[in-house]
Length: 553
Image 1 (cartoon, rainbow, N blue to C red):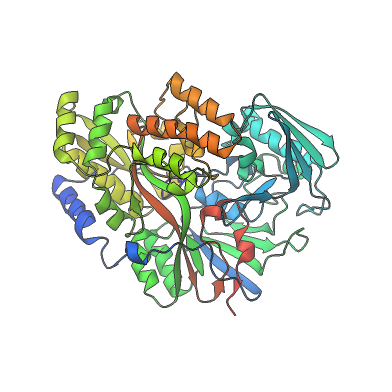
Image 2 (tube, rainbow, N blue to C red):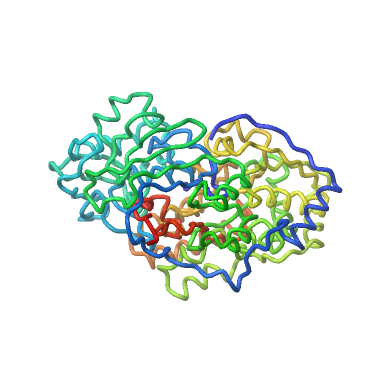
């Protein structure tokens, strides 16, 4: 997803612009990032950064609450829900066969149970009496249809890759669906808790036709249903009183589209919005010290990276990628770009993603990684050895937040110090998603900031992105031995055995620097004093979190 995803695994369409920075301005920005942090905001320190699983539970119902999102979803069609704005809203309207919990574990969702009678078969027994928002009862036919839309090439589904190993989807009972796989697939059952496993009404989707996801009923089963969508301004969700589970504590949830980071922060400080995820990092200190609410941090399963999108130019030489990695001031970026709320890393995966592994396996996954410390002289030598001195590279940037803009600036500063020429190309926040979905949007771009979040609690979720032809393999990297390791890990259901294979993938991807890892980044959420109950973990991407939000008293 999801992308960021991240932030950014953030991924929509829109106009693109240009932005140039002089050497003097670059030097000033680099010094700011390395020394003082964002202006007028103290940020947070590692000592005070405590991760919590959730916010205090709500004590009562509430008429409505307002939530800030940094961009308007281009669509709420679940097959295209592969980014923060879409999933933050959609997770409360549409539900999946399985459910990702606030603790980042799996539990039954619309399927009351999932069984695996043999390595290539998954049987989903559905809950009885579940109703869609139009009042119709969910059946196995709806499940087969919904998952089938993910596989249909005409839909260009963002989740299609997760269905490549599916041989057939069949109704095997009024409330039973059987999935036959071409070969054992440890990832498929986990993805059934994401937007890949969403179930919508067959008749409802067909009735909406080409307008599905952009207006009207989403034909789903969640605790909220889609209400008024004022394009460019807000999306309203209304409580669904026919919900099969625990009803939402709020009668209405309103998502305000605020593309400017300062506007989002000011809206929270003024009380115009009650809270939000993906808090602008430059506002951590202001919100924490405001006395108007609480800034929480939780497990994010997110790493901040520089995505390599073009290996046909200078970045095709591993020495150039290594040099950029060595020249990056990761500590300065964490202080400025992440407001101090992050941990420097040279790992593409978070430590939390390896929670199911033994201590020995976790050690093996991280001990052999390249250094994260800055080494300008070694980087200069690599650039000279590669004959890349004076070569030009272009980095995409955006005003989404300082986590994006300052990472792009940090890359520019690093490249300049070691003899490269780095141009910045500014892309509007609403258009940043196009980098993930539209190859034309990536033309002329060599790198862009990417916060990649895991959609499941498994390192393979990220590491498989470098398999030949993978969705996020924008640079076209191809290595048959890497592909073979991905296939081997995918076929192993036992977590410990699988993660032993994944340590080899982690090492290989790190050595090749297919993305340049920068930092681990926790999830941030701000709630004013009026509301509570939202989870602090990245589970909000697929868990109906808004149903838990209610009154503090």
